[in-house]
Image (cartoon, rainbow, N blue to C red; front, top):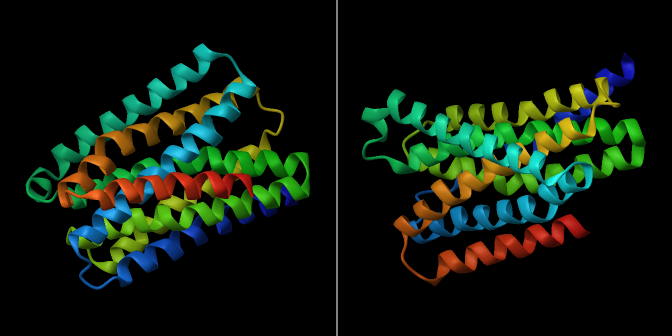
Length: 243
């Protein structure tokens, strides 16, 4: 039981530390230009594409069959569409002329869903070996920094108070600790279930990139900087996962 608690705390620390640092960086920017906001959002979208295409989905395909992975992706996309509709209804008056705030909220929900299987990976990794668990935790922590920025910047510039932004950023990272707990608790979990969690997170991120980040970055600024940010995020994501 002590080992499960230790793994959970490690997952919780690394999951919240990276996103919190990113959130602090995001709220510290003083009146960033639309060009800069566009770059940050497109950079985050490139990073997420790299994570989905070169980490989450390949790992899922190793564990199970194509239909199971596709089912996970579709469920992830459907869940994010559902969340999008709920957000639209709940915050209709606030979000009518504030697409930045909506983007921040949708990204935060998506990242919270995405962080659970990451925590599951950390928990399962520690069950396999200490080295694997720690390397996964550190890698996840590093790529959570730009994700925290991608949440905080649109929320803050959409009118949300900095303290509230940081609170939501930390909240999205807590699911990593929850995932680590379940990963450690059921280290012998079915591979198909783990693959379903990974592909579900991949589907959620695909929707965030296609339905929120890229459209919003293009809306903020029409220029080459959005394409550069996207490409840069993709390349850095690939490098981070292969170091």
